[in-house]
Image (cartoon, rainbow, N blue to C red; front, top):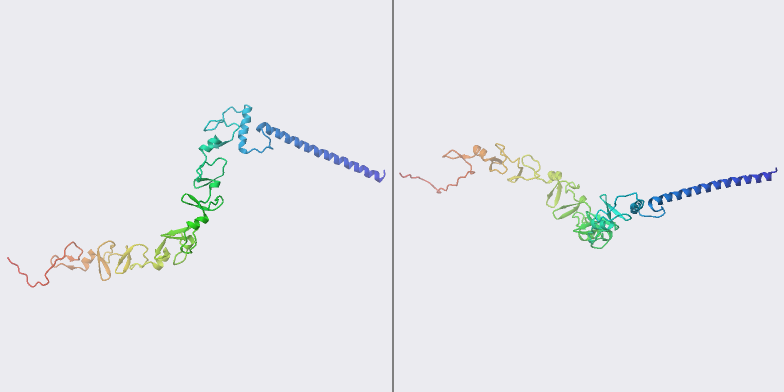
Length: 323
């Protein structure tokens, strides 16, 4: 056998091999198609539709119930909780595990739009804010009628306001930087003034006061440490700052607990007292230590009793006693 005959024989063998492989591939594809057909038939038998029909998920239960009822598989009733109408083959909505037909759901459970006062149906887009519900198309700024569905907003009374309208008409300005205090930003108010949180700083150390305690002094505001160290008056006795009410006497200030009798150390705040030189004394200590004695009864004359002043003639030279 020459070489040309050998080559021809080899080509015939390769064609047979390729033909066998093609037949095998075609057979596998036919088998897959038959399996897909069987799957469609099984779905059709069970659900009543094929996977090629795009039916919404909420329809599935109704279709399945209809098929099972047809085959006498389910004997229990399946009715609307409110009107008792059968739900077989109908759309329904579960409310706390109880099925409701669409009209009953809309009438009993759908929310009312805050703006138009109409029912927000089951198939409408609904937006809500702080227990207020709106149709999507009703959720708008009451000033410029701009949709607020994807915009920052605030509430002014019962009305929705976009941030631009609020800034232009309702927002206050920071007294420190003179810029608008934007809705939703942190701010502080004291008296009739408003600050951004970062603008309300101590006049002494210039650090933000934030939510910490502060002390006003004229038109300035101080944190407690700066006020005590720089502004607050010092107690004449302990030399510490007065941060709350004290006692003033002879142009000097004391803590209430520091203003006490120089003799017995009892507190004089709210009590009658006098002084000897620069030192305060209670009535008892002053009477025993410094007061003059009455020539008649030898009792201290303090001027703190209930007696009344005695008026004598300017000059008394002789006293005549008649019997």
